[in-house]
Length: 240
Ligand SMILES: [Ca+2]
Image 1 (cartoon, rainbow, N blue to C red):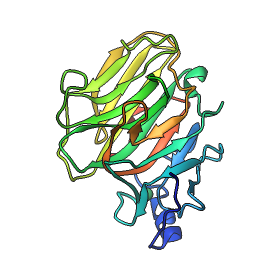
Image 2: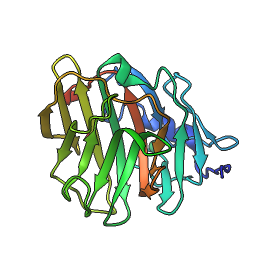
Image 3: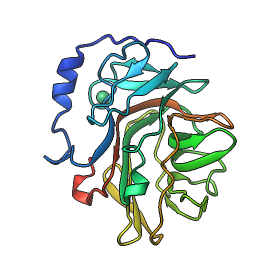
Image 4: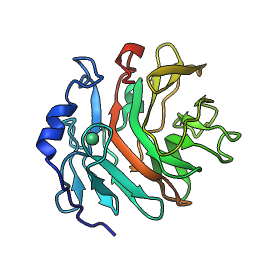
């Protein structure tokens, strides 16, 4: 059930401090969704700061002050998530290139979804997962599966550089439909590229943050500065 979440620090100051930290001047170019996790959610809705109106319904997650930049969104690993309804602007795969970028601080040695376009009855789309130990993608699965609109899941770009728990790390995945190249970056460093070819990533479902809804695999820890772009960021634009 949704519930209102509280905020306990100077959100405005935190927001101002976040501007320009580690990002190029055009960091807002092509944004389809941006949750800074700095601002109080009103009536259980977290505001999308991209200007695209992709606001999220908070389902148990809380805003805490100890984020990577300002506050963060906290997920208890039991039943917390944020859900964003499907929309044309959030369906970045239909438009071609994309970038998923987030700071994460995972609390357990486990695997879990960070971002996942999904709907009920096991229809999963593009998903960004963290893995410290588990079976996902042969046991080393921090990265993304850019599931295409036909359901093909041979569209993975995975880092073997799984990072320690209880510390902040940055994870970004880019896909350039024109070149067919997908890349994953960990802590601002290039980790791996996969030539996947041209396809249409499935991003037409609702976006679940911290939760895979149909089998309830779930993320435990903190997420911050959650961004979805309708373009492939350059290496220089990835924060570290
Ligand atoms: Ca933040």
